[in-house]
Amino acid sequence: MVMGTLSQSGSLFPSRWAVAFWGLSTGAVAILMLWAGGNDALNGLQTMTIIVAAPFVVVMVGMCVSLYLDLSRDPLVADLRRKAPESINSPL
Image (cartoon, rainbow, N blue to C red; front, top):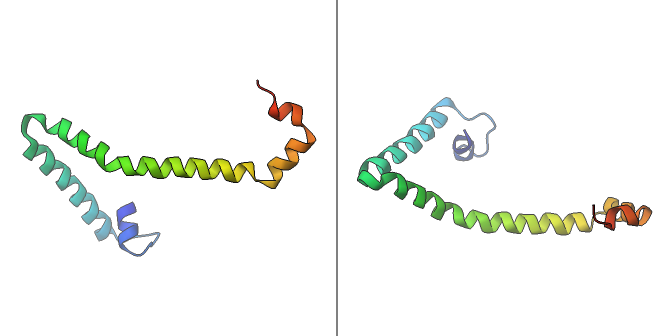
């Protein structure tokens, strides 16, 4: 569904043909990789998944840092810290 949406310029309701095409294509690639890999195919598929996902980890860490910085500068949070500093800054 997501790949269909992306391939049709962000349409919220991609055509059934696009969704079916991307679903069948993704499934076919996975089946071919498992078939071509022989006895150790599953380990190869897992390794490729980790390698492909590794750059996304960097993006997620960057998003976590950005969220922390944004929340630390949020006026509402700053106002709460001024009103009750002992409850916010003290450990549990």
